[in-house]
Image (cartoon, rainbow, N blue to C red; front, top):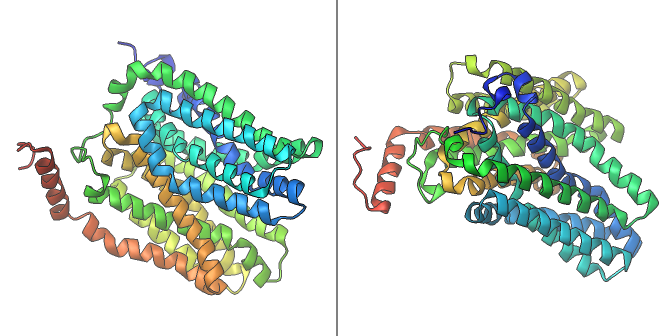
Length: 425
């Protein structure tokens, strides 16, 4: 049987072989197009709100509605993809988001009441919520497990390009026709749907063999919360997102506290992004040579992020500030790679999209915490909170990764299924 992991190029487990893999290129293009609307919303919704009302308030509420729904519906959306199948599930979500953006374009051009704009923004976020988990499941079907770290590292590099270009596309189209800001998101979602459907359809016959690369280390409990190791990765995602959000959300107020301009804040974020890209590529090249387990690597990297956030807290000049940002950036992409690769072993095969979507939602929640703490506390309080969340997870780690709790969870799984298996000795 010919599988998606054995064409000519796919026996090459190097980055060069991965880049030559047509299916990976198609997947990368599809997922970037799926992400584009989320990266466009901040500018597009503000433009739309201003066009309809002449103010910025509605645009801000649209962004809020989109973000809340994107987070809240991540798990239900992922579960839907698992039940429908990746092919039909991704098509449904992406076409649904496209139709919603079309309705938003029409509502904007007709200058309908603001409540409709806010509702449509929320619905679009709900449709796109489960898509990231579906795409991550699809990635495991089209490339060998050994290529996952390199694939994620390359993806982390490419997304930085999309982060920059997506708002520029919105700005260009909006200068021609303001309601066209929503139309850019229509095009991105439709193109992503076409590419994803084509790729997922081709991968269906290879589903079982490719997914057999997953180590069934936990005997796949139906309830993800029964697996303490999965809970560990959820908490790591929250702390990870919080640390990254602390650096990026805090960039502007930090710059202001030093008497710097908004342009300097952009440079501070750029430092994190650049070192994240570099470290991600380096980690992907050498990760097979590391002797530490994925759990140990995650703890070391999370401890480094705690150190980085602590550095931001105590910084009184650029001498401490810049190295702290470098530390956070350096361990961002590697932790992203470790998490994405290791958590797959803890998710049942028939709940992949749901499991990955929950990890994505946890990261988003963590990132959002930085904004909550910035609004609730002083800048210093917000910065140290980024370190505290990481410390809490590190303290809980010995409990979550204890062999005793793990064996107890496996026993609960066996009782739940009503099967007295000999796998537990």
